[in-house]
Amino acid sequence: MTAQRLDGTATLKTIKAELTERVALLREKGVVPGLGTVLVGDDPGSHWYVGAKHKDCAEIGIESLRVDLPATATQAEVEAEIDRLNADPSCTGFLVQQPTGLDEFRLLSRVDPDKDVDGLHPVNLGKLVLGEAGPLPCTPIGCIELLRRHGVELDGAHVVVVGRGLTVGRPLGLLLTRRSENATTTLCHTGTRDLAAHVREADVVVAAAGVPGLVTADMVKPGAALLDVGVSRVDGKIAGDLAPDVWDVAGWVSPNPGGVGPMTRAMLLTNIVARAERALEDAAS
Ligand SMILES: Nc1nc(=O)c2c([nH]1)NC[C@@H]1CN(c3ccc(C(=O)N[C@@H](CCC(=O)O)C(=O)O)cc3)C=[N+]21
Image (cartoon, rainbow, N blue to C red):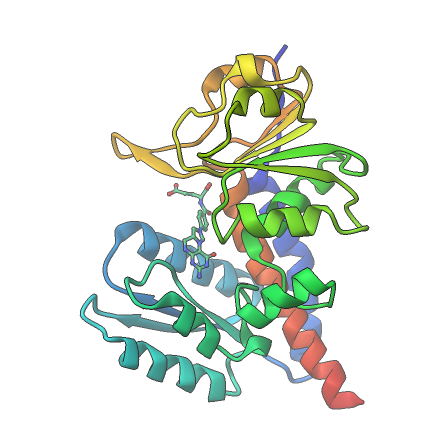
């Protein structure tokens, strides 16, 4: 048996086609959405991610406001760029690419919550806890969208999340246990006593620990859906958290690359377009 692929690359393409129509409608009404990014330093991975986001935007009609700062940029300098983008009416939303090496809580908190297209501002994470509408964090909602578009059932399913990071593991449980998803979640991490025993019970596994090959075939319930979120580099190549042998046991697997990474970008684009549409509705009423 070999698992079916949860194809993030193909799904990104589909979502871009849908968003292209929505952006065209906005433009007809005189609204041109714009994505801002603030990048600090010269990490090649971060440069690739930010470049990919702007390429996506160009393809679907979203304008780019790209700010690249040297690794020597200070907290105050980055905050000044945030203030500028907050005040810039051509910027629909923006993000500060992580990691910056600076005080990220203070940077995130300084972004206008209405322009936080990453969904990581404390107010927006608070809204998620409280069940209020707001932008949703891109990687975890990308995981859910990838499963939904491949018909993987979440209603009543047991989802085991491996990893308690702020951008994936922590918020994912909040999203999955909403009535709209209706899943049950177990959050495992490096302190979990018997990881294999938990993973074996899962209908869906989200591996987001950043430990190459952490989840192996012997830990997987036959037919389960597995999402590979971890990104490590081994010999210059991307290594995910799933061992290759899981494909023999699972029902569904997201490859890495080509799985959740492109979905993160798809959800960022979705958040920008949704924010531009909302601004237009607010202006009309
Ligand atoms: N404020 C902020 N927001 C982010 O959304 C954010 C961030 N900081 N810091 C870093 C992480 C990482 N991230 C990825 C985006 C796209 C791919 C992606 O599209 N990857 C491709 C190709 C990867 C490759 O070949 O190098 C794939 O998986 O197929 C991966 C990872 C966004 N992040």
